[in-house]
Length: 136
Image (cartoon, rainbow, N blue to C red; front, side):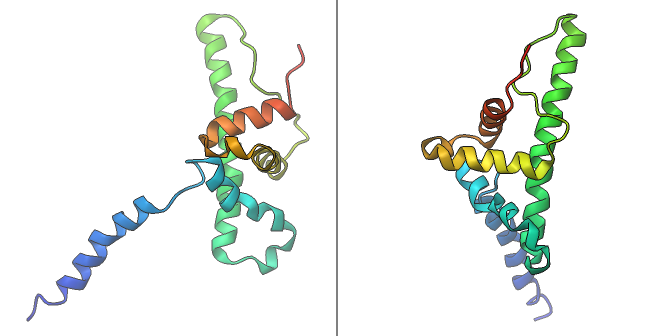
């Protein structure tokens, strides 16, 4: 009888990873990114966003920002390792903020629904490259 309380606890602990694994995240596909990150369209109405929506907003902004920063770091790494410059996949102007970059990705996914099944990273790469090409 004393260990009866362990049953609900065990079910909770064992069930949590299963739930977390089945929930799709915005990193997995453009469809998920579109569904979750469309909250940026409501960013002017922050007072009416739920806590979950605010978390999604910040997560999407940070993800795209982190991706672009990662590309910049990789470009610098390649330059230092090879002593040669490589062509950047995109050149986002410094005046563009994270919300604008997420909106560019969302627009690309909406305009290319067949590509929405693809990995989010490739969609970020293509959308920013299309919108902000580098001019040598």
